Structure formats: structure tokens, C-alpha cells
Image (cartoon, rainbow, N blue to C red; front, side):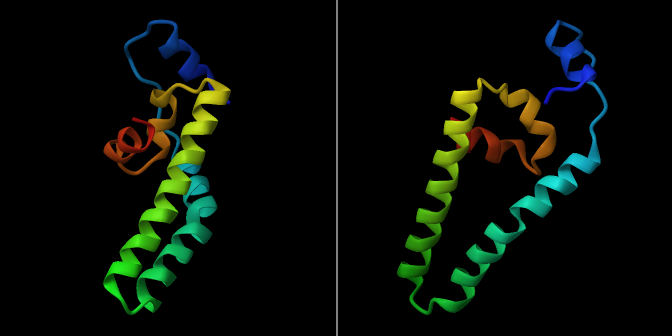
Length: 95
């Protein structure tokens, strides 16, 4: 849900609102199980080609889900950006 600072920025105020660190912590807490699953694949699969293929499948599925949510909910990527650790990854996922 957009905050008042986000609404002001959307309305045309070029000054960005404050970044909330608590949201980033929440995002990391929610992402934790998926990250642990990917790390388990990375550390337990002995064949490099199979390991990479599995990690690509995991990331492709997660990216497809993220794009679906953005599209269906009409989310602005600029409102998502403060909650991710690297904006380049956000652009790579959302296109």
C-alpha cells in the first residue's frame, strides 16, 4: 500500500520520501525461505550444469510471478524499488 510520501511523489513532487528500512527487513524475512531453498540447491547438487539449470528454473518462476503481480495490481516499479537491495535486479525481473 502506497504511503503518503509515495502519493506526494506520484503527484509530481520530485523530492523522494523517506525510505523505510522496516519494509526492507520484512521483504528479506519473506524472501528467506526461497533464498534458503536456492542455496540448498546450490550446495547439494553435485553437477554444475544441473545446479545452474535448477537455479535458472527457480529464478524464472519467481520472476514470472513478480511480473504477474505487477501487471494484475498495476504496481509502479518505482514504488517497489526502495524495498529491494539492487534496482538493477528489479529492472531485470520486470523488464
